[in-house]
Image (cartoon, rainbow, N blue to C red; front, top):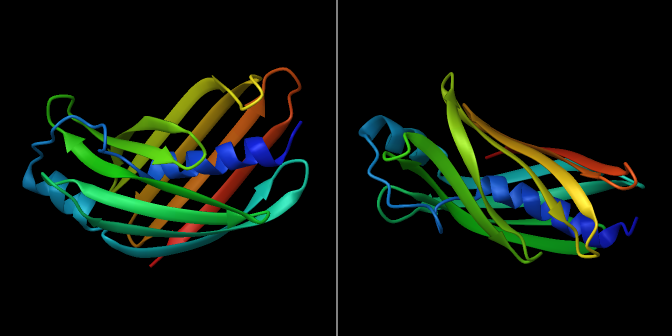
Length: 175
């Protein structure tokens, strides 16, 4: 397994969960949905561990700002193994679908949309997909981001179908 290429892609998936809206349909959310999204506006910092062929420290920062049409934009950067990965996107509540959505792009050539659900007083976004890496090898990706009270938590796992090798990370964020 080539560690750094897939590692970059895996970390970029973290951003996927942070971003939403740059491809999200127009959102016309009610006051409660908008207030919940806006409660996360601010500067966030996180530190966690990526486990794969080796263990690496992951250091991230994330900025959530007001967007257009009751959306929240985000811009984040993570550093690991000497590599900088950036993500950006938007979070929104889409009335037509009656759900929260997060969309993202990254400097690791990944983009996507995760669906969010309200859980208790917060939100959970989940993504599961199968996609090829930079070398064309299939990988299964599971990622989630939880927005609860005064915390954001990101976790993801990448499993290479052919070899069974995996990468996983958990990064808790605080203001």
